[in-house]
Image (cartoon, rainbow, N blue to C red; front, side, top):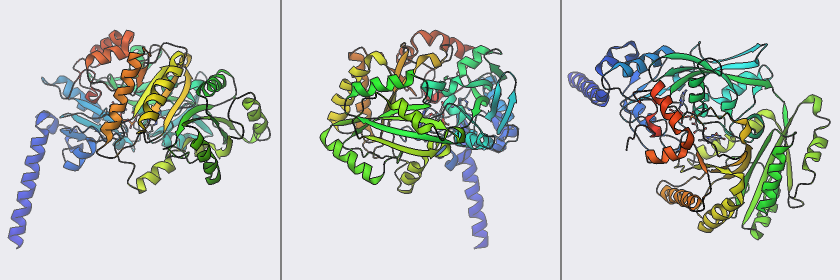
Length: 516
Ligand code: FAD
């Protein structure tokens, strides 16, 4: 038995090695002889984990996964690809919370950024200087929740957020990073002083508005096309301790949007968002369990008489010094708003509980096995001048009528002047535009129904000439990408040639490398 066991285990190990060799055959042998080979895995669990994402729709198997322990590991990997005759593709995987395979690399190498987390040179460091004030140097692999925890220790915090904090700094800076604070502080990409980036040529470059500005602006909103962000210097301000959090309800979309636009035009609020409530979706959902059971009953009765209710959500930060006046200040901000009388709901929360509001919903869905389902999400920027048409053509005529959408639907305005034109991120031309998020969840075999709803929405917008832009975009053809970038396309393409001429980085975005 012992001899048999010995032979069997040897055979298994030979088969395993052959399998690994076969998997890794699309990457050059030199790679396996470098130091980093020890941190490169072709193990089936590693490959499987790197070939899925939050969307649960696309599956692309890489040849290998790199678990870097230092930034030099990533540098060596990119250099090798750049210097070989047939380069292999490489993608940084932050927290894998994309929905369309954007952080995947078919037959290439996925860099699991998370494994850098314990590196002493990265991490999160808070500093101050006379020209910048307080700032944090943060590894690209860090989750925003960890940035929040680390900065709060100093009584400080970043100013611009996403609704959900379990996303990496590198991942959101590659898109924009938006939420209800964007109208006031700009997206996350507007709150970065400096970055360290490893370009597609394997060069380690520090960049800012003043030093290597072309790379700096390329990378912000650059969909991972120009380099891997290993450090970002993030703007910090004094953190509040508490928030006053108010939701008011409307049955009239024009009153709702007029009030939203008014609130982002005045001083006073720190966060303004909005969402839709329809009969099929309960007032509370995974994004936030805001309403008490009795308020939910009250809202359900309102919903039984209206097809759609619009919920405006606003927050004002405060601390011990302003605790006595916060209610009065909030009251003033609410003056003249045209919500349905009696449908104002207020909560008082810690700053942390407010910012981390989505986490409890996630944990609950995870416990029910409902978090890892397909998410054919669709995010759009809609110019203010067409938001009324969008309401009728999309919310009412498509989503409400088809009665298929399951999940939160967000709609809130933001201001263009907080975005820098030189960044790669694409937004509509108008000064005010709306962020619309269709955050569906589906079963494993019916996500395509929701996906066809997305196609229908796009077709409807095109037919009516609504000049929308996709946020977290995904397209099937180069022509669509060119249309998306519009006037920015030439610059985007030139920057690609400058910083990643061999088209090595982020193939999962399918802009320059079409994998299927
Ligand atoms: P990944 O999915 O791992 O990567 C995304 C892209 O960035 C890929 O192309 C990847 O190659 C690239 N990338 C990753 N790390 C780096 C790096 N260090 N350097 C260069 N490129 C890199 N977005 C918002 O703006 N606001 C929200 O409120 C919001 N809420 C969300 C809530 C949930 C539950 C989920 C799932 C997503 C949400 N998003 C939101 C979208 C999210 O910001 C993006 O999907 C983001 O890319 C996810 O970050 P990640 O770390 O998981 O990135």
